[in-house]
Length: 86
Image (cartoon, rainbow, N blue to C red; front, side, top):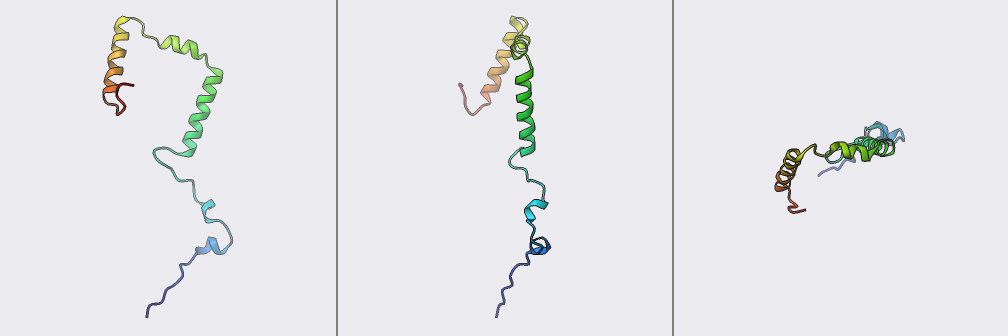
């Protein structure tokens, strides 16, 4: 004869509380919900407050040699990409 026991729900379930609220949120994938929210907030703040056009101008290559180095680095990075040619 085998007797099947019901699993013990534990003290939190018997007390009428939701056990999922006592645990911290789990991470999903490579990040977390909190990290995503912080990143999105930072991006929104940057786009609202910063001079994006001035930042883009400052990021331009200073000369032809630097432009060539940047182009080579881009091509090297794209050669490792699964989506080649984009």
